[in-house]
Image (cartoon, rainbow, N blue to C red):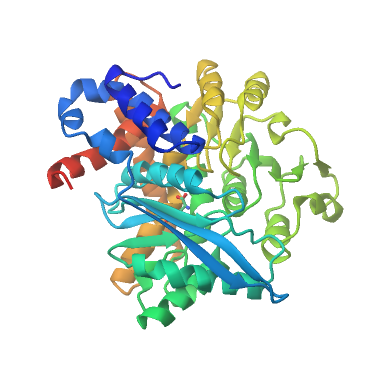
Length: 448
Ligand code: GLU
């Protein structure tokens, strides 16, 4: 049970009752409500208009069957989801996740986080999330295409550049967005570029979108280090995961003079004291769709560890970039013992609440995902801007915009934490600043 202000306890209890068994969603709501005590004390208008209660109930939830035929001619059935959580600031915006662990509770937690993240970017985007329990692992290109087509055949009726704009997340990258866009275009007979983001560069995509989440988390961590009077130069960094976020976080850390000495996948982790070879990881994961255990065979001096945790590798900065609740109390204790000073979340909610408490109590600066990983969706909003004006920007210009947005998110978190009496607490600052922008829009629009 999170530590809540009396006014917020009822709302949390109602969320538990109304969404039974959805533990990740409970965790995400509890974590935000925990920060809002000083806000409801200072601004009674939010509680009077039941803004928190309205915010924790999605505007719309869509659950649908996805039937498709695999390469062996067998009929497969998956479940598809889209949770349209809040549209006070703009069309619902957030990725699609294809992973066997996906169920309504995961989609709701991600959609809820997305509201505050998107608000923090300062851009005109609401919050939503979707996905399926489809497992792309081991599936052929043809199977992935047929699944995406079947998924979009149902979802298209709920989407639109002014309504709901999906993108990628775990299991959904450029390949999947291509198949989804193709099917949307075929069904609607419209080349509506702004309906999906993460598109290819030759057909409406934005420069830097692929790199954005990974680059963004490092830009954010760099601002955190600067605020502590430090920099990435000479720092040992551990990144978890080896997907899109992890790969481009690693690339940017190396550009800024740090060394990423370890990364992982669900089978284990690799340690490479010379610095993880980004091109090799890209080739293994993106081209060959292979496991990280193959890394040491292709690069001397590295080792693969199949048991234990990537957080056992000593580092100054930890960037959890894999998935929710991957860094628990044990991991946090080891990081503290090994002298880590900054933990910045590249994934969504990768640290458990106990881990966050342990890190914060030990004086480790904790940067929450809804701030630190906002670079992905912020660049999606830049892609929407380019689509709306039928324009495309250079890599340099887009990256400069991303860096500026991440600096803005960082400063907003710190200033808000200060204003509400929790100086240096990025988690509180992110929750409060994200909340206020959405809450004010909801107040202005009345009870809808
Ligand atoms: N899935 C990403 C996130 O967690 C990006 C969402 C988007 O670009 O819409 O923020």
